[in-house]
Image (tube, rainbow, N blue to C red):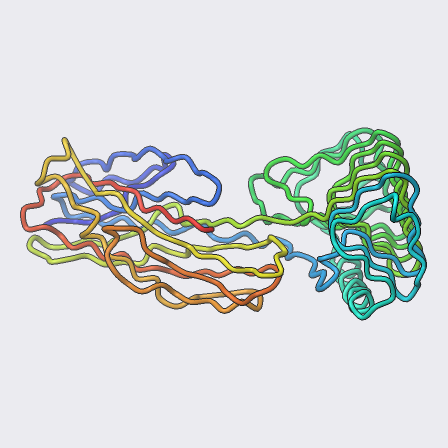
Length: 402
């Protein structure tokens, strides 16, 4: 019997088939941004079958949908007032008020929308986002003072209904770049001078939301991360940097020699840790099985949310990688199939099925706006050469996205 089972990356343990040799461990290949690597098969001269389930997706908080407000770094309801050389990267909007002052000397890398249709729609979308954030069920109630603490993804409120940051608040996404943090302040958010919000473990500023029931004040020289969604007003005092957004529904936004940079996300791809290619009798022509879900997530907040995922493969070898100990990458076929799930308004299209003798398109998205994602469950088909010998074969299938 010739049997195909997956080599298991990341040092995961596997059982030994009864009466057969132990399956060797396959070293994990390092992940790089936008590239997913997966060792997928072994060929053994014993009767054995390994079923390795792909890791499940965590039941994480979804993003708060900002709608058209995502394009704005600063938004207010009554007035926007600036003093000094504030730099705003992203659009600046005001509605229903009309008075925007202090630009120049402040600069806006984007468009100023004062009481126009775009600003009015952004305020409508901001209200929906505010209500979404405020209506989520808290996962934990924490002290008012957040400085000196480290928090993981979740929805947080405080018994006092306020939040303050003195010193450093660390938000740790624990390796999940899609992780969402929501802070619900029934009244105020106040940060001290020189305070910081530090993002670690892949945390992204665009996935941090501060819902403030009245007004927010950011202290002098502080460094802040996340999207402030305030019911009333936002005051950003002298020399403060914000990676995110300052969005006020009804009141004013006041700036003073600050740096406000609209946060955007990233484009990345993930694959299952292992796959089961089943078993094959001697003389079988090929073995075919699903790899498990491959997911592209696009959180760039792009006006044109297009991407193309490609896939390639190495040869699969055993022993000294002689000709009888090699299954060439040209013998590895890939069929993406249809999407099993999608989000966003893009048009998603699978690539054509074919050999991985050269890189090919796995999946693509086009004509979309804002965030989106797609998951598909590709089929790998391995054609077995007539001269192939028994052994523990391993190779790498590489998915990338751009």
